[in-house]
Image 1 (tube, one colour):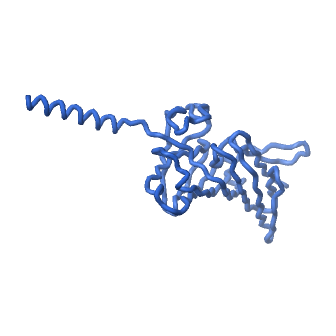
Image 2: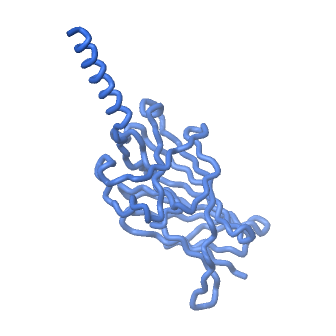
Length: 224
């Protein structure tokens, strides 16, 4: 009888361990009020280099095992830091809308055929801190093909719903964009950009409100 009781206890214990090991993780969208993107264009390398920075209030983190940032599958990450320390998120696959808290409102983004990937950040060590959690992502993506407008000027266009930049998928956010380039390139947004010229090196700055349900266009013209 005693051996039978021990066997039953072991079966129950192993079942609990198995359930914990196979527990489906919960995801939540990682949101920020402001995103700062510094971009540099390289026609020679056919790449656009980006340094993206944003901060998150730990008090805003709802319950989840991982916090998600969606990025285009074509990006090539060079470095990610969280509060200045190197960090490697998991690339989550096989997710459904029910894996998210609350239920993810854009299930088409989770399909295998989607152009985006879910980067999951485990932030247990940061939830109790009083200060903002600071994220910095350095990466590049292939330069889109040049097109010509009605005047014959060449340009490339990037839409925010292509997720070449991290986005807030819950509420509106402010996006601040800065491009440093030669004087042959012009940055165009829906709002006017501030331009400074330092010996032929242009610094162009602009901002816009990014809505989860409405895409914004970022256009780069080449003057030559």
